[in-house]
Length: 172
Image (cartoon, rainbow, N blue to C red; front, top):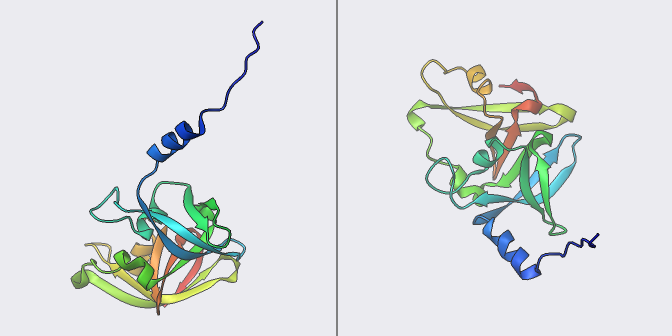
């Protein structure tokens, strides 16, 4: 019987194949708050071109995508990691770092409410929630019952992305 050995692929070839699976991205510095309250300083990878609309991928696109894990880079160690979307309580970014996130809403149909969100583990988030209402879906409860899992609050110089699955109460 012949000795079967599996040789490792040529490193240069492996890198070429790996590069072919990459898509152009930008890194957005963020702070993640996980279930249990742990905070992680990361950079999130956003595609330079969205799959669902013209322009770059937004954090809402990434967080509401039909993916279980979010790609990130630990800002302290520089190592890549995958974070379970369901383990995220919230994601905080500087408003300037997420310039493509703001604007474009239909201001004629939008309302802004100042809210406090109480999350699992005693975490809270305060901020302005802008909601663009559609016909027959004008109530705040309609917004929170929409299928998108994350929503955005504007809080001073930060944008805070909150996981609806972890919300206990919303106070107006």
